[in-house]
Length: 504
Length: 99
Image (cartoon, rainbow over all chains, first blue to last red; front, side):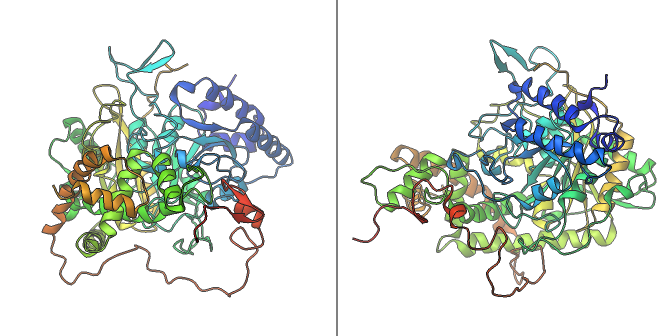
């Protein structure tokens, strides 16, 4: 019997259309797998009843030869996307009990194309984090483990020695890597799709800012946030993006331009493409394995007929400091709405005035990392510091943007490592300096500041048996060339490794 | 250290987050660590550079000034207050603000 959970999204879609199997069969197989994977803590809210009902509807359509592009395909949804009448938490205590009365545009698009929702996936609180350790609902565990004695294991019902699945989309990356859903939605503000994908041997695509509607996604930093998929293959990402993308009058930054058939570019190869290799991404203290993998990627692209061009992006080192002004500033403003009045948690006693109600609710409702960022954001926006910090950061951001524009006069794509390391242990950086954790996003954050599309493709394993990713960054709204490059990387890497199922 | 305890107290007040006294000192250290790192932006020459708020250059679209009837529109008071911790009729209930 076929194990449906082993099929790619593309194969599932095709098999469902051909009636080789039903959505009910596939959906049940996934529900059983999710139930057996509680140790990973990838889901905040599994929704098996919604999934079964939707699968039955899809099967009725498929039986008549009808249905959308994703008809009957089971997906996981990051719990940052508002889903009508289904608990939506952003992994924060402050959104306790929040059941939106509306549906995000992305999930509306996906469900409109026939996708089945298996549940809401765990994440860092308000997407603020790089390890999924800031979630109110607990750490997510990476299905991958180190080889040898310190490998992740279950002792007395508890996970010991677990690794991070990355963050903030750690539930999405863990669930896709562990075959708990065919694909997942995710969001990326500084690397939150690409870094978790790199840590879990999955493909993570952050589209151009403005390609996908942000409407109905819980906002973190509005000028940087962008939704995209985490999938098992490049083709699956192309399919997901086509469904997720498109103009939305409800998001004024979502651009009105046609959505191409991204799948059509796969297999075209990279012959004749110019691929830039920025020297500033060779950072101090980068493990030799990452350096080697990067060189391997360069050789793969060369062998596939691309021309390699050495480029320079001298402002790279300023990208993270810019990000840690702009993102907290926007977050402090966006998160002002959580006040204990309109939705979610309220903490106050009868004697409290309204200010005390706000202050107590927000103190109890937000976790430490979220508070830290709100305070930084409030500080850099406050009188006397606004010009020195916020305006200066926006000016440096403009220079970083211009630097990329210049680079794309010479090259079609830029190739870099996705992360400066493989997945680290949960708790290993918990008490470290916050800045050390922030450095995880050093290779990914530039694409957010410049609004560019980026993709992480699994490219190999390190000495501990953990996956490593390579990143491609493309021109704005040129996801087609980005996917062509990613497809070529995927073909060359031939990454077929899977985590062994220690959690079952 | 760029941020002291009193600044944290002030910023926490502005952000409407009740931070207990014993958290102010550690927060001052953490926030200073982040801000000291950010200081490197002072090295960059930004003379004559325009501040960039968004990478999207599109003009904000205009629309007719009429009541819309999709999710973003009016006419749904039950939906608006459905998730509120405390309501009365179609109002949010808060502690008395005016004496």
